[in-house]
Length: 293
Ligand code: NAD
Image (cartoon, rainbow, N blue to C red; front, side):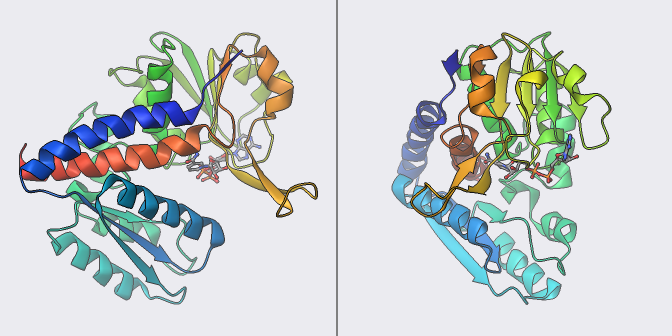
């Protein structure tokens, strides 16, 4: 069994980022990312914090906009309008989920597609569906695909089963992997909460992706011997033996499944690392595109 670790692959992405960054800087451009956080969700705060730290590490311009949970739709749209008009900002990321009273779709649609480094604007999702590489692909799915490419795992003609149909992960990853680019050309099936006989379906997968949000949901009965397993899940569970009383686990029961797999991603230390790396890569690319370089 091979462990597909996120760190070395993310570092390869950062090396490319720094090369492009140096070229942009020489031409007088500094990539800028704005992250918008509404409310006090601790997991969202932690994600935003690590995005900000990574921007600083790379020497990028970074802006964090924190708004109270009771922010209105109009106030949030006004923030997006300001960022769209700000020339020092090349990427805008609105940390999801937003508080329930806000309309996420309307907020995402307000972002200038050229600054939509999270790749969730309909223009970018449309380009993804059209195999048009000029758009931005969502960060977590493109991180999963990059991991497969870097590990030399063939996807062309392979049966890929993705469990989870969110736009953020499952549906977008399906578009990427059935696309004609590198790490694509797979035969993709997307399973979800209404899928019948899930175990039989997932056992047909050469590459199985879990993006469900249920701790350790995928067990040995879901995985065929010799499959590649990508675990997107990040779930915090109670663990009295852990320092702070809890720990992170994936959607895959790693200990029960790992020995059956040809390769598998750990949680933590797997896909999660890639998400931020792809966000930085998208932001630097957005800057480059704007600069016309
Ligand atoms: P979501 O809740 O939007 O979607 C979950 C999907 O799982 C749904 O499509 C649903 O149909 C499916 N599902 C639920 N129960 C099921 C069942 N019993 N059988 C089959 N399918 C079922 O979640 P999401 O935003 O796609 O995130 C999924 C997981 O990935 C979560 O654990 C989340 O924390 C994690 N995540 C990780 C990263 C990362 O950077 N690694 C990024 C985004 C999300």
